[in-house]
Image (cartoon, rainbow, N blue to C red; front, side, top):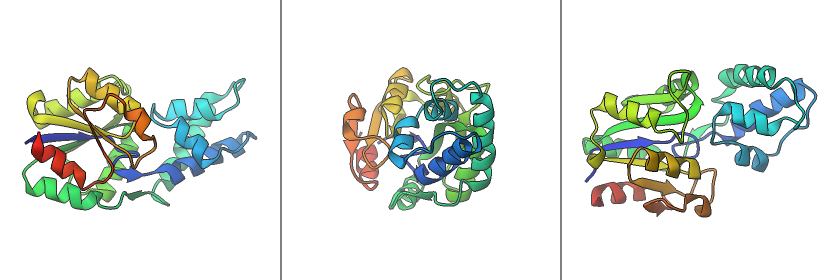
Amino acid sequence: MKKFVIFDLDGTLLNTLEDLKDSTNYAMCNFGYQKRTLDEVRSFVGNGVRKLIERAVPKDCQNVDECLECFKTHYSENMYNKTAPYEGILEVLKELREKGLKIGVVSNKFDSAVKELCEKYFQGLIDIAIGQSDEIAKKPAPDGVLKAMEILGAQKEFTIYVGDSDVDVETAKNAVLPCLGVTWGFRDRANLSGADFIIDRPSDIIDVIMSV
């Protein structure tokens, strides 16, 4: 049985896609650019908000920084509009807590948003939440995961990483951790190639952690 679990946030614990789309399109409209569909935004996320905006703007865009700041300002004020935990996630986190596991979250979303979202939706269930910042290299670099483990006092042989994308699989490998891939998020099963385990329901998280 593992004693520590590190989760990705967007697409793993929280369905944030609609709010990300709305803030992306707010920035696009503000600068006169074409709005993006939900599926397009789904394909753009996973590597941090700068990459999201770089992928959303026209190829010849000269004001990516301004678009990014517009997005971040709007998202900071609107990130709770449609976002919610995936069905069954709260119950899983509570059960992990009851079993004595320490829980961390590491995301490529900017750090203040990660901390605020975890506080709002998972108060008392998350021990440490780390997002993108100047001090922490974004995933798939292992820096955030290793920092979370340091804070938790976690050893690699007792830790598992859980995420929904190829970025998460690579992050786990870079941190030398087993990876549990989930299929209910922003990527399909094919993107989870290389994960040690792949599951389709949040309740299966418990079974995997208890069995390894």
